[in-house]
Length: 181
Image (cartoon, helix red, strand yellow):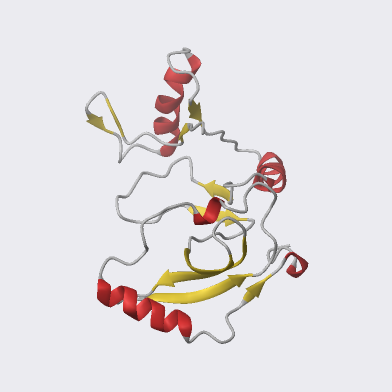
């Protein structure tokens, strides 16, 4: 699998912190190695624009790609306050991660997946059943050998007990369509 690194901001350069510099200054500093061909793929520079029409076009076309949720909006005069969410996110869709808690079918060809997420005390809670055929070639992928999601026998027993008591978790099927439409 090929991976890339996408740079979208620079917070320190040459040992000098840039947190109090406006985004326009940080962005210009970030672009330097890319314009001088000092770096090349897999190092990539995240695109930026001041044009609202271009941003709207990116939101509708780029977010069709897996892994691209939306856009991040930053003010050109904005500094970087550590530990504070100071930017706006415009999402076309929301994503989340889940743990496969159980399957129907076989490990090689699962028919449906019971998905869970950990709650605050660390108990695996059921959140959804994916009851749709998995795409061709991906059937066995979710069930490849992985360590169990729980870290202790107590959590394993609690997770199994909670998963066994699920009667009507939410079902997702292709006919539900795109919830963010």
